[in-house]
Every structure is written in structure tokens, then in C-alpha cells.
Amino acid sequence: MPKFNLNNRDGLSKETIKKIMKGEIGLLLILLILCLVFSVTTDSFSNANNLLNVTRQISIVLIISIGMLCVLLSGEIDLSVGSAAALAGVACANVIKQTDSIFLGILAALLIGVAVGIANGSLTVYGRIPSFIVTLAMMGVLRGIALVWTQGKAVSGLPKPFAFLGAGYFWVVPASTVLCIILLIGAYFIIHKTKHGVYLKATGANTEAAILSAIAISKYKIAAFVAAGVFSAVGGIITTSKLLSAQAVAADGMEMDVLSAVILGGASLSGGVGTITGTVLGALIIGVINNGMNLLNISSFYQKIVKGVIILLAVLIRRKDKK
Image (cartoon, rainbow, N blue to C red; front, side, top):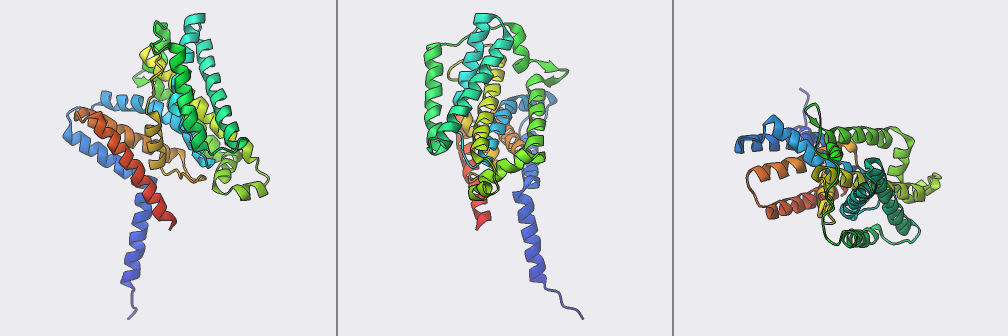
């Protein structure tokens, strides 16, 4: 009779399960379990209005996470995204008040994002300063500029039509959610379906090999930082639109939510690894946890602890994978 190696079969089965649980299917299962838990423990989580509200809440985080993913894929990191969003929001509000033009306000915010991205990228690439140091410094500089510009006061009195982007609806779907989906589709196509996405990943995965392959790594690193700046500016515009006012302290701590979403979604801090799908699932998990804990009246202090633990666990799992 033929003999079967049961131990080998069991080992293969365990490895398969591990790969599934550590991949995007595993994230989807975690998301479904969290939704089930909060549906049972709260009365309103599974309500359609609340679920749509969750998409609105995570839309800003997801949009900024697209830029963060680009930076991580290039092998760098950006800690200034929250401050960039705040400064862009302040610029948008001030220009709208001075010109009565929503278009010029949005344009000014986007230009701020481009300028921040170029500054971060140039200092990192040409200044040869680690991106962690550059963006940590810029986090303080940009927030300081926003505070000086506003003197610590909210910029309010914006026209009501401007509120549509952050608080309006397309039928029953929040406008910010629709915009987020459009940007995600565009980012997915560029990162996963074009040569530029391949070059960006190659830049972060193996810089020496990318150079030998004649990839303009400087260009792609700066482009990644510009993407982070622009998407942060879009997040700042939506925040300002939703509140119909801009504050220099807006998006404070946004870096934590964004990093939690991207790293939980599978992006590697060493570069070259990460997907839009994983980032979406990571952001949804963070959003569901935030919403569920709010409905359970759990203090925001504990929520910060949870996010920190999530980042540590996600990084620990990725390190084990490399051994």
C-alpha cells in the first residue's frame, strides 16, 4: 500500500493558511469579523447611514494614504502629510475669502501640495538627508506656517457651495467617498498597470538594480513625494469643505491613521512592496475600529493605543516573513 506523509501534508496546509491570513484575504476576513463584532455589540453600527458615514470618515485618510503608499514604495517615508493637509486647507480658505473663487482656492491648495512634495523630495534626494528627518522637520515647519498665517484662529465664513465636496451627496453616497473612489481607481491603474508603477516599486525594492536598469530613481522619488503632497492637499481641501472653515490644527495626528492603514495593508517600510487594494482594506479596518469604539463610547486615548499596537503588530509580522 502507498504511504502518505501526513506531517508534510499538515505542514503545507499550515503554510497555506499563514499566507492567506497574512495577505489581502486575511485582511478581508479581519474586516468582516470586526463588522460582525460591532454589529452585535452596538445597536447602530450596521445601520446603512452609519456605514455610509464610515466611508465618509475614511475617505480623507484613504486619499492621503495613496500618497503615503507611493512614498513607501519608493523606499522613503513622509511624516509631514497631516501638516501639509492643514496648510493646504488654510491656503484654500484664505484664497477663497480674498477672491470669492472656489476654483482659485482649490488651485492654491494643490500648488501648496506640489511645493511641499518638491521640497521634501529635493532635500531627500539632492540634499541626501534621510526622508524621516526631512519630513519630521517639515511636519513642524508646515504646521508652524499655518499657525502664523492664521494666528491660531479658524478661517471661517466660506461660501456654502464649497461645502458640497466635504459634506454633500451624490444621491445617497457622500461626495468625498465618490472622489476617493475615483482617485483610488486612477492610482490603481498607474501603480499596478503601467511601467511607471513598476519603476516606482523597483526604485524602492533595489536601488542599485534600478540604477543599472537605467531607471531615473531621483525623478521617481521626487514624484512620489509630490504625489504625497498633492493627495495631502486634497485631504485638506475636503476637511475644510466639510467644516466650512480651516484651522491650523486640522489633521493633527493624521500621520498615525495613514501609516496604520498603509502598513496594515501590507506596505513595507523598506520599500518596493504595497498595493492599493491592501491600503483600502487597511483603511477600512482602521475606520471600522474607530467608528465601533466611538459607538461603544471608548475614550479616544485608548483608540490611540490601539492604532499604535496595530502598527507594531503589522511591522512585526512583516519582519517575520523576511526571516
